[in-house]
Length: 255
Image 1: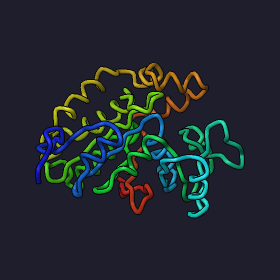
Image 2: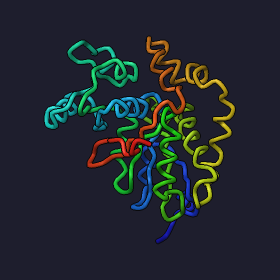
Image 3: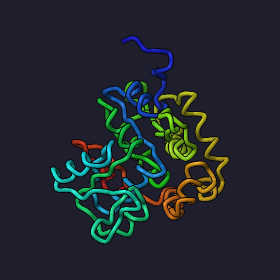
Image 4: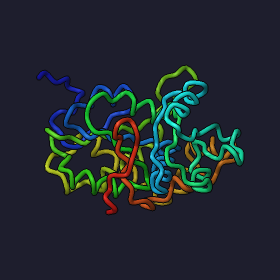
């Protein structure tokens, strides 16, 4: 097999951005770890921690509604559309307050799109809330070698023209997983992965850092500061959401 120089193929822990990076670095024996801290993977962690299976949807609107109806699932709507009858949205605060759902369709243009872009390998949802639990599971499953790599994929956001905007919060989430894996895997860390934990070390106050970064400011300015604060609760969850038959479910085994 011929490897491109940018593929990080010699390393057990790799890091690349966005859906294109996920698609290019994923391979049959890899664990692809999607990180979308504000707010998709944080929502997945919160929901799965309450016993909810999460079906990611890379689109909103009619297609997401039809999918929810087909599956007999609840549908997450826009934050402003939440009512007593429709209590679920892409908001960790809403999901924490809503009644637990058996199955939730969760539309997201970033995290869900990346999960859908991965055609091979195992897909895991990670954030600051469950970074250590995810790292524990990956190490226990024997991931972290060049043959069975961990591929960290910070989702990033989108500029108005649709191009990728690398987002600090997602780098911090990926860094938390890398930091928890260091010294526990058989393969070396790629330079891209190795550079992430020092960024996390500089963020001594995660709540303040998330509130002050671009994505956090946007949520705070729109009246959703609690979503940012929930996302900043490092290692508050012990769940390991793994995509099984298109749905994220907890495979932590209660660890």
